[in-house]
Each structure stands twice: as C-alpha cells, then as structure tokens.
Amino acid sequence: MLYHQVTPNPATDQIVFVHIRKTAGTALAATLMQGLGAHPPMRTPWGSAERAETGLLALHGPLRRAAINLGEDLAILGRRLTGRPVHLVEDQPFYGAHMILGHEPPGPRPRHYITILRDPAERFLSDHAFMRSKRDRARSDCLEHRLYDLELPEFVEAIEARPEVYQHDYQCRQLADGRPDLEAARRAVDERLWLAAALPQIDRFVARIGEALGIAFPPPAHVRRTKGKPGIESLDPGLVARIRALNPGDAALVRHVAREFDAL
Image (cartoon, rainbow, N blue to C red; front, side, top):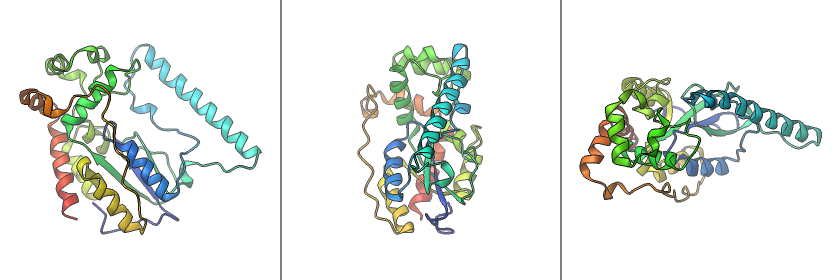
C-alpha cells in the first residue's frame, strides 16, 4: 500500500473508492463523502460494463443506461440554466462506484485508490440473500440467475457441480482487471492502492484516512445485515468450508490485506 509514500491533497487530488459489491461499502462511502465535502456526480458513465447480461437483459442494460444518462443530462442542463452548481466526477475530492480498479472515468486530478475487502464466505452469504429477493439479477456473482431461487445448501451444491456459472474470486477480479488472478490482485494492493483493509478493520481504516488528511471523520454508520442473510455462526461448519473453497483467491487476498493494514 502507498499510504506512507504519498498523501492526497483533497483540494487538488481525488480519492477513488473501488466499491466491491456486498462489502459494506455504502456506509463507508457516505462517511468519506460527507467528511471530504464531496457530492454524488450528476453524471454516472460507469457500471454497465460490469453486468453479466443475457437474453432480454442484454437489451435492457444499454437502454436503461441510455435513459439514465439522458435524465442526468437534462438535470445538468436545468441546473446550468438556473445558475446552480453542477457536480461532475472530475470536480470531486472523493467518489466511489462499483467498478474495476483502473476502469473509472478519466479525470484531471491525481488519483489515490482505496477499497474494503470482506471475508468471502460472509460476502457469498450476502450475495445469495440479496439476489434471492431481486428480480434483476444481472449484477451478481452467479451467471445462472435462476439458481438464486435455491436454498443456500442447494445453491452451493449447484455451483460446485457447475463452476463455470460462478464468478469465483470476485474481489480479486475487481483489483486485477476483471481476472480472478490472486497475484495480480496482491500486486495491485501493494503497488496501486493507497489504502485497503478488511471489513473488521473498517473503523481503523477510516481513522487512518483521517490522520493522513487531518480530518476527523465520524465512524461509519452501523451496517445492517442483508435481509435474509444467515449468521455464519449458525451454519454447519462443513457448509461454510465448502463456501470458502469456492473463493480461495479471495480468502488469500483478504488475509494479505488484513496483514498489510495491521503492519502500517
């Protein structure tokens, strides 16, 4: 990590949060955005490329993105006509999005990347519980969306039987240009990220950012458990071990990040 090598200047630089899905990043982003005086960008050009879309969803995705961008452009035009400020990605000292490291929109500010990782078994449980309640399952770890209708043990069994339908080591992919490459993800942590931590370290993570920037951030808000997500302690240990085995790269990456953060 580059934490001791460089210090972002919020007046001129940009902290970019690689928000990996189901890692409790929403609460973190809200805390940092408020503390840094950032605003949600009024145009959001990223996100659609990450979606694994098939059938009607392949049409739905681009049309939905085009409609969103049109609405954003009209809102921006209205604000400009009435003299109100327009907040764009390139203007902000901080922003975060579900995106692969390095795939964010271009901008003129020097960038400093941060992320939070989560125990892959906990993240797996959150993904399963969250997607079971959704109709649009395009942005998910399992590419065979109907499998989310299965109960957890059957869901795990189905993925074990057909590993090609599951995006294993998703957290590695987000740091390694979309590839489930543990070594590339480790190099990204060591050589490209300004700061990273595992979810149990999130309060100290925010404190570290505040120490470097001279800002007293409040602790992130309490993260609510995904509705329907079982506590990992309530599950059969054998099932938990099988879930962890589906994401060996992520498990190793989380351990690496936690060690490196504690060593700072």
